[in-house]
Image 1 (cartoon, one colour):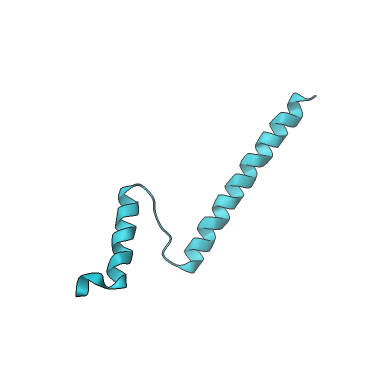
Image 2 (cartoon, rainbow, N blue to C red):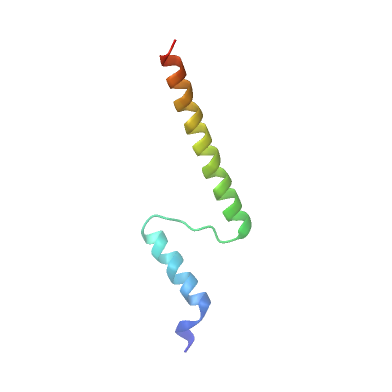
Length: 58
C-alpha cells in the first residue's frame, strides 16, 4: 500500500513536529547548522553564567 512508504512517514513525522512547534532540519547540512547553533548558544549561556559568578566574587 502506498500509505506505508517511508517518504510518507517522514512527512507525517515532520508535520507532527511542526504542529508541536518543532521544526526538523531536512538535510545533513541543515542538521549540522542547527546543531552548531545550539552548541554556540549553550556555550554563550555557560560563559555568561561563569562571568556573572566570577563578578559576584569580586
